[in-house]
Length: 304
Image (cartoon, rainbow, N blue to C red; front, top):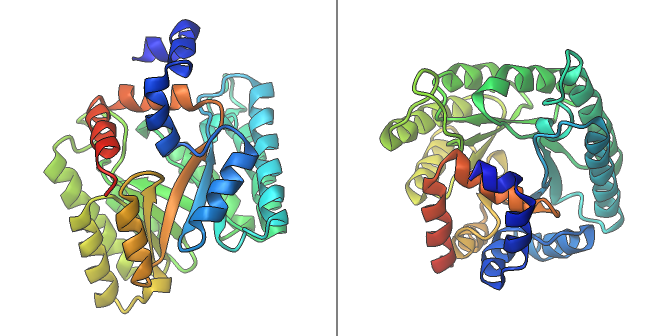
């Protein structure tokens, strides 16, 4: 799968295969800023949105600069459209230079993220920093800490499958902190991660308890109805109203459930990717965990 992700021939075939378009169109909001703005306007009638400009594993400084420019344009367009109260952006540090060769990679990623955060502050919205595989966790959390010194609202993402995450939740559960808790989509080694689905779910609940008992804003990223129910129970037990935590789901996954939860008055945020790099995005997701193929297939067959 990784070889196919790098293959221009496979990419060309996929991009011109009509059978793949329904899958792509369901999960990705098109390739242009205009397309993602239209999707954002539609979704924000009852939900919130976080927008991801697709692209990661950048190994070229010019490419990283291009990604930053894309986010700057997106943020200004969100401001011009009056959408910044209900839409923010998510960024992957690997797309901003974290994966560049040399000792300055983290500094380049930090400087680029600072530029994006400054524009977000200017237009009145926020930024959440996505988490990638476990080898980048310390670097990513260090950059998040640097960003929060100037922009305390910067969101962090933690993955319940990693054995370290309970400690990270404790460290990040302070006042004003925004933490998105997800299960994790990377095929991590047993030495650093839980491999069994039930162990991951149990870790998710333990981490969620820490965040709900903390002083920050828990952002509960899961499509699992049981975990959504547990999150609601924990929020109520800790005196949190609907404005004091978020439920988050991927664009195109359980959209009926998203609308139903929003109609109940809960805060629901949709993770909305867009851009021309959708091919590599999907192939890498499948390569990281082949079970994702069945997940995407089931999601495509069931709109609820």
